[in-house]
Figure 1: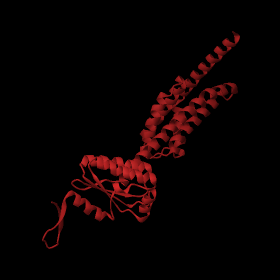
Figure 2 (figure 1 turned 180 degrees about the vertical axis):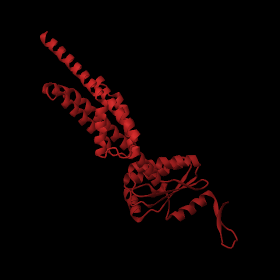
Figure 3 (figure 1 turned 135 degrees about the vertical axis):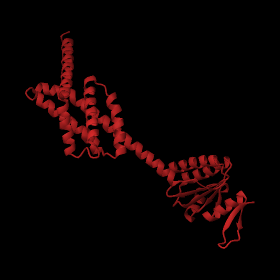
Length: 299
C-alpha cells in the first residue's frame, strides 16, 4: 500500500514538473525563439527564407513542440513535419537545414532548463528525463518525414525518366515506333510493356516497330518479357516488328531458346518502317516537283 502511494506521488510529481516545464517554455517563448532564430541564422540554416517566413515557421515549430510536451501526443508534430518536409524538398532545403534547425531548438530548450535548475541538480535531472524523450521523438518524426518526402520525389523523378527513356511515338495513323535505348531490366521491361499496350489502345495502332539498336544486351528474363510483349500486342490487334537486333543479342536469344517464330524481325529501323508501311497498305508515291518530294499514300 505504501509502495502504491509512493508511485502515485511520483506520477503526480512528474505531471506537475511537466506542466512546470510547459509554463516555463511559454513564459520564455519570445526570448528563446529569438535565440533559436539568431543561432540558425549564424549557422546558415535559414538560407532562402524570407524574414516573414522565418517568423511564421519558428513560431509554429516552437508552439508545436510545447503542445507535444504538454499533451504527450505527436499528431500535430507529424502533420506539420510532413508539410515542412514537402515545402523543404520543393524549395531545395538540405537535410542539414531541416534537421539542424530542430537540433538547435533542442539545445536552446536544454540550456534554458539548465539555467532554471542549475542550483537543483536533482530537479534538473528529472526535468531532462521528461523533456529529452519528447525532443528526440519530434526530431525523429521530422527526420523521417524529410527522408520519406525525398524518397517520394526521387521515385517520381525515376518514373519520369523511365517514361522518357521509352517513348512510344506515333509516326502516322495506326503506326507506332518504340525506340529502346540502354540497359533493360525486369522492372523497365514491365513498365515498357504497360506503356506500349496503353498507347496501342489509345491510338488504335495496328503495327508497332520496336527498335532495340541501342540495347547492349538482354538476359533470359528480359528476352522472355519481350516475347510476352509481342504476344500481348497481338492480342490487342497490333503486329510488332522488332528491328536492330545486334549479333550479340541474336546469339543470346538463340542460346536461351527463345521462341523466335512469334517475332517479326527486320534488320534496321528504316526496314522496319518500310515493312510496317507495307502491312498498313502504304506505297511510295513520287510527286513531280523541282525538289523531287516523295510521299506515302495508302493503297
